[in-house]
Image 1 (tube, rainbow, N blue to C red):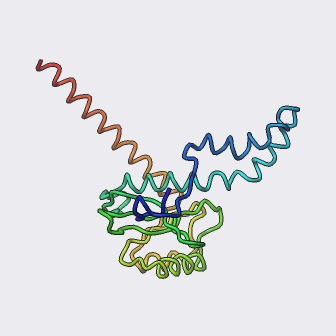
Image 2 (cartoon, helix red, strand yellow):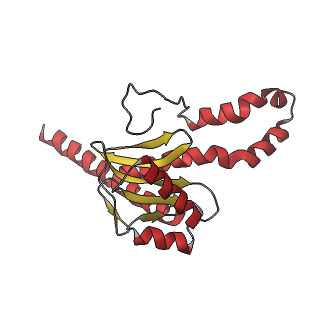
Image 3 (tube, rainbow, N blue to C red):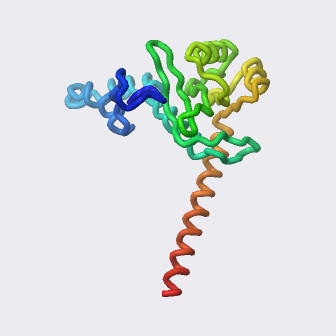
Length: 200
């Protein structure tokens, strides 16, 4: 995996496991196989419960990126999402931006995704805005996705800059809407197939 927007020949690629089940296996099961073999699975279970947020966080981020891509050009909950045809993660040295979306390589969406139960606050906003400015990205729609919601100060800043805030409440509605749209699309396709068969 390369930083979003990089050329295919660029250096600095990261090798990552995509499948969440393989991620779980190599994070928890494989390193603790000896404990599991001698029947001490409860020790492993305790560790998993303590560390699970670290495992779920990156998976949640990828789910959100795919959700934002699926929302390309659509209006949901009164929010018009920018039209994009690519999405990913950008990083450089110790700086990282979780969410970047583009239309034909022009950046249209930029933002942060957090699985933390702690509300996204003004300090978090300052950090992501600083990173965006240092990276030289301008003119993109700011999107903050926070499992723990946002504080009043952060909400004010995001709304003042015409940004988008998505919490679990909004995401649940969005996922329901996307499911309905997909279901309707399948019905249309099946109806069209049945109509074509009848004309043969």
